[in-house]
Length: 260
Image 1 (cartoon, rainbow, N blue to C red):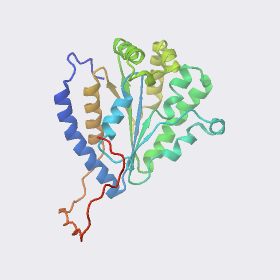
Image 2 (image 1 turned 180 degrees about the vertical axis):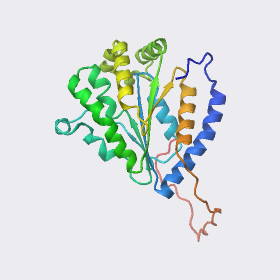
Image 3 (image 1 turned 90 degrees about the vertical axis):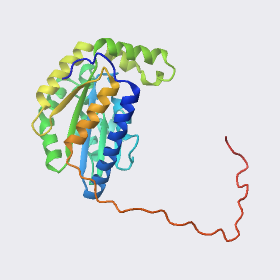
Image 4 (image 1 turned 60 degrees about the vertical axis):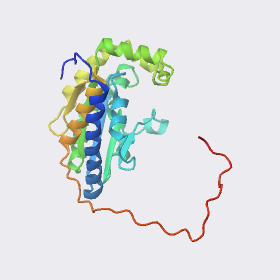
């Protein structure tokens, strides 16, 4: 895992590098669409570690029909009666899709375990079966990438305080975030056990230090691109056609109300 970055990445070099990576993500998208590729990306990490910002950076220049973001709400009564991973399976990628899980089945190993929403027996059972589930996902032809975002205590505190005081960010703060903030070491123990149980040869974990949000976004996107053997499909040269003649049409004031 990388250490803390002493000097945060400046905005202009960040935006320049991100623009180049966005162009590559479009190539990845076209490859998936053309070749029927399947990619599943899982994001986990501490509250305030920047998962949402990473996902936004990945998806802001690509098609939401190809890059699908899955952020499931709490399970219904019916879903609670199912096998635990069952409700996640329908969201796995089909051919030509890249699915991003904003938290995933690993809720059971993290927040559910720490906050007491499942029993210790249920958490340990999950950790026993998840390597086999992920082996089945990978054996189906899906590229599975799992990222853990780790933020330091001081930086997490700063970000949480921003969520309290910044009116643009208050929606990011929930009572559950406050409870989980107080249980730093419980989360550390749960994370360590999760890594020991589910860091496998076919579905390894990749940890990213995210105190510098911008650098973390660039590092993760670069790693995704290096982990998928994509080649952009051939692209025909495109020339805009001529517009039709007006044939006497005159522009009318078709809207009564204009903005701007």
